[in-house]
Length: 137
Image (cartoon, rainbow, N blue to C red; front, side, top):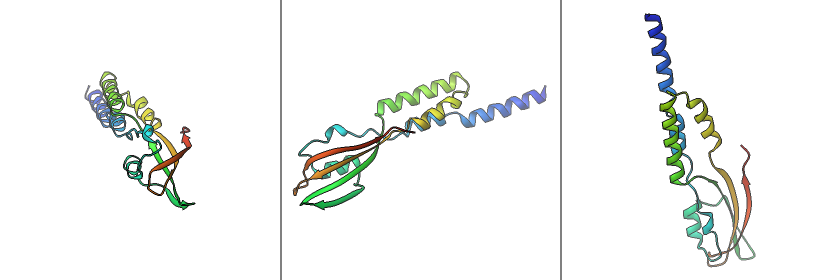
């Protein structure tokens, strides 16, 4: 009887240590970037505020050519919903959901995207080129 109780306690401790990992991973996914804002006339400072510093920046023919690479993440509502569902599934399955939830969140961690943006002499966006979207994981 004591041996069974001891095994039960060990199993419960192991499960309690694994629960919540997918919940935390879902809540810490990268935020969604507003790619719809990339339009002619947009100021360079707004681009940097949204996407961060460019990977490369050089002047060619009097124009600034910059490449921005970022991870396109998820909306706040999506992240909260996923975290809630992972938490509910953890409770309903006494932690066994983590065997599915954690690998799932490892795969769905955003897509790497790259754009080349070309700014005029006033640092206003003149045109842009979508370079890539990494969907392979």
